[in-house]
Every structure is written in structure tokens, then in C-alpha cells.
Length: 300
Image (cartoon, rainbow, N blue to C red):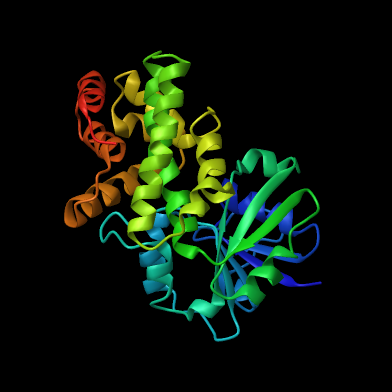
């Protein structure tokens, strides 16, 4: 029985601990002590070789700087989805400053923590440049989770991060009661935009038609279980972002990622109309004015 540690005790971390505990000996830890089964100190958690990182994407760099705890024997599965808002760095770029790419895998695919906690059927992708370790991680998941493996780390990361921004836009669409036609158009064009962005950075186009791309996007942009979708609903109701995030009580990764995408699109001249309109709305632009501007775009 493999010994696994989960770092990050939010809903997603707890869900992954639940899933992996079906076949593994699992402990969990976080910055603050939590009243959870098998909760241990960070030191005890990092004594294990297989470690899942389920920390907010925007907190990753700070956490890595603070905790220099990795060994050559560690194999990490990164379950965080996002792009660093301050630097525009992808998760793999940040982690590879501290560990070899051969030690790193990235978990993507359509998955709400609530349903994983209920052991409902789910399909996920383990992405790594190290095929052997990706397969090893894949075999640790329980029978109710179907796992696939991929070597397209960049494509998987882009899909997992970008879908949160499109989900904010979809929530706005729902909140404004624009109809199913509009939401279908938005989500499908969001997929095109996501693929345009990812292939610019070397991702494989087919990744965006897989679980890591279309699968994760369709789930996140069509359900009130999605925190980012609920951010969009709140914005459509003219609530402030601070008010929305306080009501959520959780991190909505699409907020930070929208900032990152806006910065990257300007620096690299990448056409990202939906992501950039989400960024503008987060900075106070009227959602109706944003809709008008989005509909006026004529580029494919």
C-alpha cells in the first residue's frame, strides 16, 4: 500500500484524500490545523514520497518559497489549476524552479470535489513528462475514478486554468438570462480561445478536445457547483467582487487567472476577447457594456 500525503485541506484536497485512501495510506495537512481524520504536520506529510499538492494556485509560489521541503525521492501530483497573476507563470514553470520535471505530474479533468467525496463516477488525466510516474499515479486512484495519462503538460495546465475564466463569463451569461443559445456560443468560442492560447505556448491542439480541455470546461461553465460560475452570477447581479468572494468563502481561481491572461495577451499580442472582457468586468466595467463590446468583435 503506497503512502501518500495531501497538502491542502480545502474541499478539493479533502476530496482527493478521500479518493486516494481507497487504495493508499493517506494523510493530509494544511497551513492551519484542521479537525480532519489523519491530519498531520507538514513535516510528517513530507516524510512520504508521494505528495499531492492541492493549494490555491495564487499561493503556490509563496508556499514553495516558505517551505523548502522537497527531496529527490519526492513525486508530486499538482492538483492546483491556475496561472500566477503576478508573473503570468504556469504551474509547471513555478514547480520546475524547485524540482525536476521527472518528479512532477499534473491532475486535470472535469471533477467537482462534492461528487468525488460521494464516490461518484469521474474521469481524470494525469499529465507528466515522465510517463512511468504518470502511470504510477494513475494506478493509485480508486475504481470510481477512471484515469488517463498524457505528456502534454502545458495543454493540460492551460485547459485547467482557462476554463475557470470562461466559467465566470458563463455565470454572467446565466445571471443576465441571455438564454441557452448565448451560453452555448460563449462556451464553444471559449474553447476556441483556450486552444488559441495553449497552442501559442506549444500545447497540442487535441488536448483541448479531451477531458483536460472541453471536458473540464463544459462541466465548470454549466453548473452552480462551480465557484467561478457563481462569481459570474454575482457579477451579473451587480455585486462587488469582494462581496462575492466573501459569500463563497473559498478561492475562485478564475479571478487570478483572468489577471494573468490579460497580462499575457498584451505582452504576446494574443487575441483573447472573452478572457479580456472578464478581466475588465472584474475591474468594474459594466457587464452589459462588456457584452456589447464582445458582440462587436469580428475576428474569428
